Image 1 (cartoon, one colour):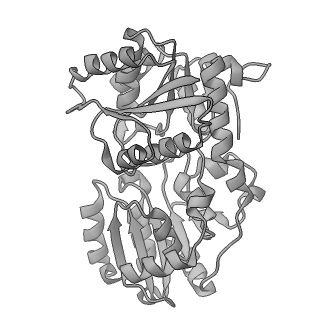
Image 2: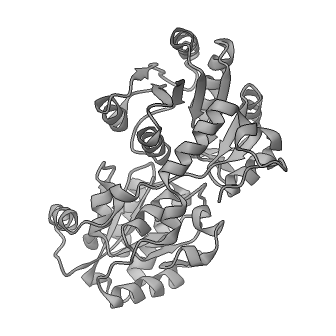
Length: 380
């Protein structure tokens, strides 16, 4: 039995947090015993994990400069005698790799979830951010990139190819499959009539998601007064986006749903999914929408862009132009309510295969999941 401690910054409703929970649910219990250390607070996903029997340890970190969290983390790792320490997200990777090194952990690995072009988890990738990341990266045995796009960015930062593997994020097909009862319940809670058309999006409300462009496109489409725009998620841009909706005159047909554990229900309530983001490390939200049977419009999604288009029917890529989005959204609304079959790309990103590759990494290190020719492992 391999004992693994996952260290993550928080356990709210973010994509990395949901990916960790999905991973733990698909880890073979006869081969891997998992625990989680959260630097800040447990959050709703942490409570779910506890209810499922996963031990969750709160480190109580108060800020990025709370160095007192480091000895507490070292003590936890030494006491637990884990075979593997696996870190997730920037702050947890920096503190977690240092703590695991000081505690003498046999194997230290990290997953890079959120490295964009010029930013990481919303912070700019300044010289200081890169130096700190690379200094601690060398303390581990391997860094896992969630897409070939992220792998290329890490190589450009200076991560050595022999230390880098690419194991993609995954999607929970059973959790996001379309359910008509869930659709009716979600629409009733939102105040949306059964025959009304709903365009939706989900994600953290930050500038790179370009929800401002989506609002402009919605205001410019024909028939918006008979359509709803559902925005699921929260973030620092929310007040400005709400103000923009009022200034565009569409606030009465826009719903800011905020963060919710019921993302599957929100997707079931939608008729089309829009993702105009210009910065993505993978694009889990787009995949979840496709699993729910939604036609998808997107600008950047490595999960799709790194694969042949035939695997993702029903997804259309658009430029960052409000006029193009207005036309495409209007075209979908004219087609009315319909659901698409499960796309091949969903099976490509199965949680079972992701977990199996990580088990191989835990048991044999980077060499266990690398082709005989060497170099970055490409799994997509």
